[in-house]
Length: 511
Image (cartoon, rainbow, N blue to C red; front, side):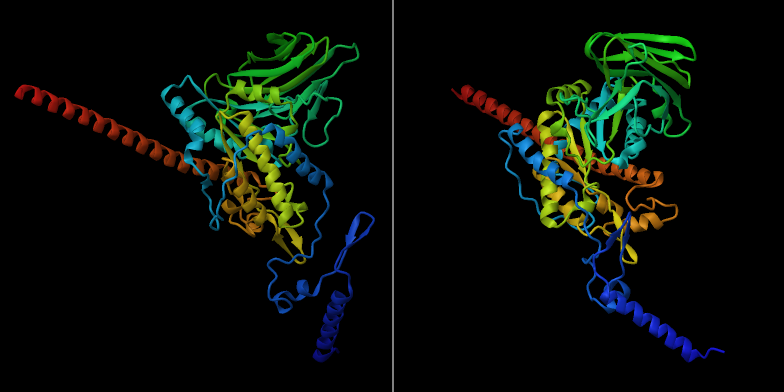
């Protein structure tokens, strides 16, 4: 029979061996085939018993990303000549902890968006359009769909806007199936160098219609309305398509085997309307004698509010200066966007080495936003900072150590360039919030500790709508105060004029 003392001695010896190994094992993990092998350090085993301050320490090595560093350097050299006469950066003070409001140096920077909403409220036949760029957090129309539905409920409009003809992840309102003869090309990620003109449309991607066995360029895709998502997004009444072909292109909309409508696109680059059936399932066939690029198709209504979701998986937001500037500018002007949202930064977080590296990335990303702002000054611009992200550090998941510094740097750089900033890191709850979102019931984030669940994305989208509502109220108050002051000055001048006229009349009567 084992005595209690023997068990105690065994556990004590085992603990001593584990602690001894933590001193003897190298701090860096070593690679064995596809696996990384390592052992706990003393502070990971003993926590605060070993170290009084573990808030900033991390035993996790930072992976190299030479492509990201190249993009940072390329952005600086590419943007400089395009931004002649760039404004001097404004000093911005450090923000208070957990600032969940939209931050900007002047609320009137949002005049393009809020004035357009005011016009739409008075004239239902007008339009307001929003463009939401981002990384994989937006896939499947996430976050954008809550923004769109909230404003469509208040201002009218249906449909979910622009999408690639071959999306990596289809929007929640419509399924894309049975595609033939279509190839996806993107300006982000692994780019096809055969297309040197860099014409990718304003979605940063196009669908290439490929030749079939007979040598004709032909493609086909089937659309099926889904029973989930927001009803207004599903109830689109029309569509328009942006494509470019070296020869005329024939676009047919079919229901089963019957042709519902036909549209012929002349040679060149065109955006034309398409008639759509009311059925829940229909298909599209595109054909031409020469190559076709389809830059996007928009499912919408003729009037009201529309928001386009552009998810770029793996992108860091450094691609806009690479795109064909005349085409990009023309596309933005054609769609007449009133608000452009940029949501990037998360894909760079795992590769940041130190505060200086975070600062260089923030400046490079801010230059991209400034470039777009100068390319298309008719819109308000809002940058959404990266969410909290966590990685396993020893025995627990912790937020990436440079995420908070990156957020601060991005905020300062964006505000100094006249771009509004919304701190998603603070909105989530700051450091450690991603772990809380993963562990919540129901879960608001998935177990990769990076991406949101549908419920989490819905919460972010609703929070964005709330922040915009608060900002709109502030804008309305400023405009109302300016109008009241203008009226007061006008009334004072009129009164002064009347008094002067009265004095002149009285003097003339005495003579």
